[in-house]
Length: 195
Image (cartoon, rainbow, N blue to C red; front, top):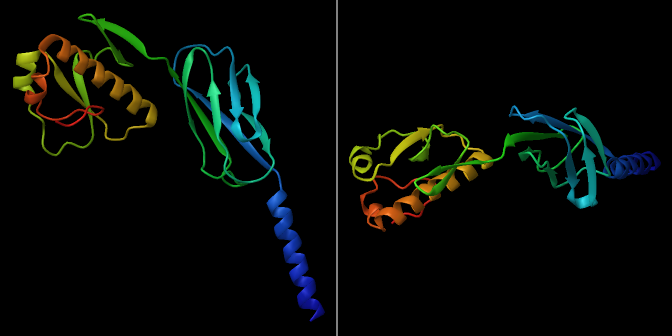
């Protein structure tokens, strides 16, 4: 009986120690732009902690225990996209920060069309696998706006760009043609309401 109690006590002390054990997490940067990084701030919300960053070298942070954390990163020249496990543990402890260019605006017919790719221009962007190709010929001929089909995999940052872009193209069409163009739209683009 003593051996069982001793074993239980030992297991309980290991479990308590594992709960309070600090976790070392690694922050990894990826600069997807040609812009030179100067400085930024890394935030750990639950700890109310800010870390000033002056280079894009990977670094490690110490967290008080495993669990759920919220991280953020801000740099004046970039839009940041952060990917990390929902629960930080000793095995799942990589925080990836991808730096993207800030959205540039291109003036088109008096409206700013926001996009990372100036080749998209006055086209709606559709994301997804398209088993039935959308015929935009008539719409393009009548309204001067076409469509571009992109990869079906959309990360949250790209979803934000595509939504903003499609909404600006829709605003342009509404300003120029009223709402009648919506009835002629062959398919609803991402970020717009279905009729």
